Length: 147
Image 1 (cartoon, one colour):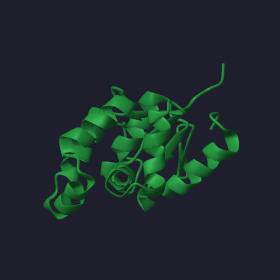
Image 2: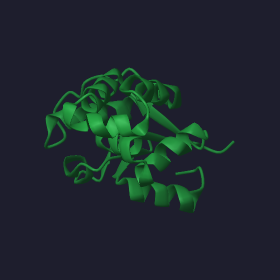
Image 3: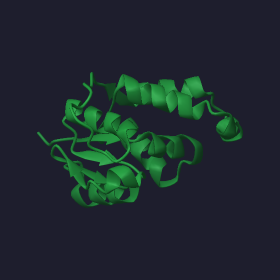
Image 4: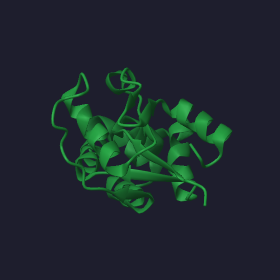
């Protein structure tokens, strides 16, 4: 049996995926097609909800024809919720990003997908490569579902 890639996706990528689709949207599409497994935590879901609800994004949310609740419901359908424990000591330059790393540990993730330089500079964490969306899609395309 082939190993389906296990990905944790940072909030910045998810916001782009839901509001502007493009390459970040491909991550959601791959999960919807059961080509990869996405994982999230309660902290990351709360962050996604708060970010999508920001007033400055309201016109972009409205342009999708979906509500924030509908976007969140869709993400909960395609991502598996894991119970992530807080990291013992800070790892990222931005302590808020440690929630992504903690989720990756709980999920035993292969990849952490982010557009955040504070995470990307780490390159890998606990066996998971930290990559951009473009790098993740390229890795998926070249390796099939064994990223």
